[in-house]
Length: 226
Image (cartoon, rainbow, N blue to C red):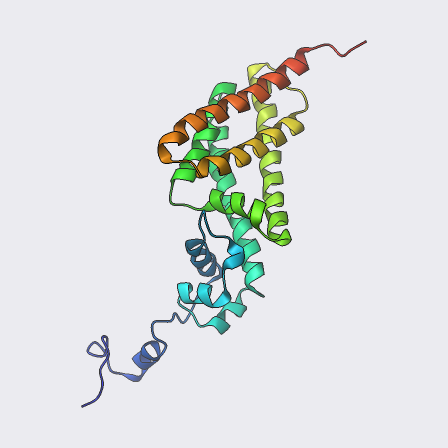
């Protein structure tokens, strides 16, 4: 009696033989599929530097050799993953800032978006925070590039809000950098806290950001020294 497989009863023709022989591997896969597979494997306690090509291929459901159709090596995939995470996170947090109409709401909206990312299932923020501190030099540079994008976008929004609220700020580029670095540093610390302590830590982070903003507004209001 011929050996059967779980799907042999549905169709026994030749075209169906290949999927059974490949043990569930997918015939066609995109770069986005590989990125999603890698993102599913990393987390708060795992760096992209620990991923192996075979592991990502297995998660994506392809043969290892098929990986090279889209990426030169695992490091290229990791840098792409960091870039994708940064781009997605900028859209999320940037949306909160764009909807803001006052200095108070832009701070709270941005911090709440950060906290949602920390507490949610998406791993964009965890990935950037981790690779920015423990990743390889190439990964750190990729994270640094994403942070510079955050700073440029935040600087633009700070200038916009300063004009709306009639409260000039001093050195908006430096203010944007200080806020961005603070949020990522504090976010990494908050990620290690128990959930019942995160809200208080987020409120403290909001206070720190407001102190930076008020300080820059105060400096802008002073007359230059004689």
